[in-house]
Length: 563
Image 1 (cartoon, rainbow, N blue to C red):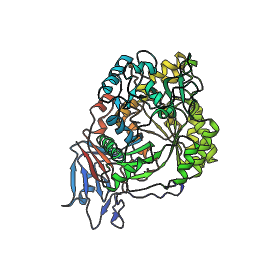
Image 2 (cartoon, rainbow, N blue to C red):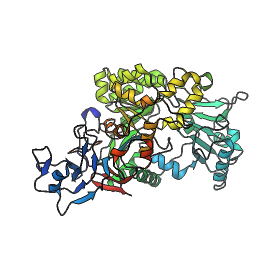
Image 3 (cartoon, one colour):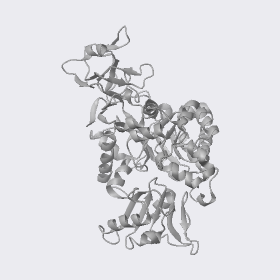
Image 4 (cartoon, rainbow, N blue to C red):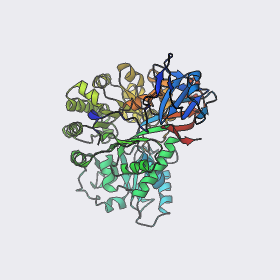
């Protein structure tokens, strides 16, 4: 396994041109003894390189960017063997880096589970209807797993007996869109041996209970409770099937690198198999998840890590909370806002990962959860300088708490957030937190504040937890800040299209120590880029983004998707 403090920057895909470049008077390097493999011209190259933000053309050779500049400077690099792409006034940009998604889980949900997304499922009646349809396709006794529900018109999660009406003879588990909550029917709880008043809550989770009988009512809080009922598994063939399904969709959205932040270490081998077979259309940075200290230690003792041309074992993932570990939360929501670990054990897990030399990656939604995480990072690293060098990172971090943001900047902690939280969660937060939290909700996803304070922020779609795998959906949400009900949150925290694109490219590269190779179009970097159907310089509003589509996606100078 790669240890961050010892890592060397590898030029991927045969990148690097040795002894073949001469610097010309205008700063563009011209090839000697060879031509470009690929040239883009007659359009705009949006580079994300602050020294040269825009260019007219770009040359690629051996998987690396050979030169970026004016067309007359690139023209000498074209020969009979050069493939030329005429942009026809359109733009190319760095490949999108999705800094938080779960590719195999994405495929598993869509290929193996019953989809329970709103608006199709938004009430107990619509839920029961979908489950009954699924039950009609399976023999009695077979498991039914559904995922994707959010809120219901009834204002609460269903209980086991309300699922029993639709699926009395099938063990059934349904999982919330975010993956943090679930509901099991009576048959499922019996099959798991959990329908007992004496059953203890699992470490890091909770079984809600019927107040009269003390029996679990079917509602499951956090992963440990959900997967104590049933954890669907994939065999080797299914792992590859689900990975390919998800990767094809990401490539079609212009994504050239994905950080898989909750990867089963066994499933990660599917990425390696695809890489070695030459069938991997993008880069993967893998963060296996550990659920407690014991599992963490066992994993670190036996793992040796992996770094291939496209796949790299990058760090270790854990969670401090599920819904949101908050300082202030209404009493009737307290059962949702519980920590995944006691604070001392949480700190010990982080220290263990840190001492082993790996990047720590923590799911933290609530303001209290963020503070726990920052304190644990500082304690493990021993100094702000060492913490910044290791780039231990936080996922989600939606709320603006100024002292926390300042500390995040001081410690050099990257933040990966999901702008679509505004669309699918802001109204729910407002309802649960109450009217006193209006300012807290209005300023959520404080992108401009993060930027002003010097926090390195990046974006990830977080599918299958979130509905959309499109990076453009994240960009629109960051620009418009509009909730599901149509309310616009504090516009002072909005960003422009180009700013949002930078967060989804160069900033996302930084979060996984890739900024020297990926995230911008500069000479010597990997030739990972997207050709768009429009000139990106004309994209000003969310409505403009709606008409934007990738024409082609390239990794190491090779097309992995064409429209």
